[in-house]
Length: 219
Image 1 (cartoon, helix red, strand yellow):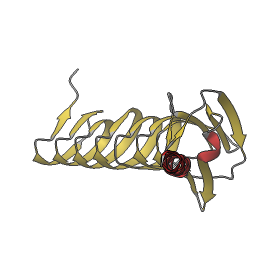
Image 2 (cartoon, rainbow, N blue to C red):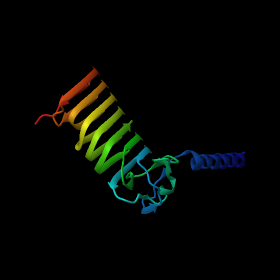
Image 3 (tube, helix red, strand yellow):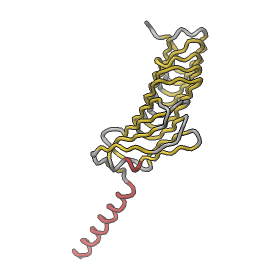
Image 4 (cartoon, rainbow, N blue to C red):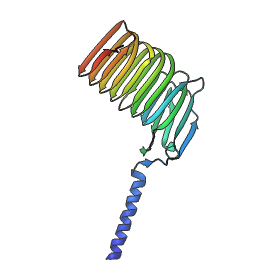
């Protein structure tokens, strides 16, 4: 009987170990590695997961990852059409987010779900589109004529340093947006979201439902 119980316990432990290999998240090794990947030209970024993304302007497209050496192989990067897709193949646990440094000639759009953080500098284009959900955050600077944003969840956006002529925002949830508009601002807010604006736009069209707000930034 004792031998039978011992064998059963051994089988159970083996089975649990087998499930852990395939079902549990991967734990980061702590050994940080930098990896450069070949990437073709893109105009928009679509990220899902938890990444810390920095975007800079340059003539040649570039992609560099920094993170735990056993986690980087799980990060998928692929360009389809004009969009760079960034996601993880499996759940993982790390002390610090995977860092992604991108070089793009002309960025026109960002889509993000999860908890990705974006910092984009030196934007100079005709239009910019932002679509984020979850707990993502975005900081943009530069110049554009039109900025169109769709925000949901607890997303945070700071585009005060992005000099836009016309800004349109559709916000739901408990997000926060700090924007600059010189000509026109259209802001629709539902839930507990808040939009703060600067730039003295000639036209402001707020539409608020719930306890949200649209207000001029105090000086």
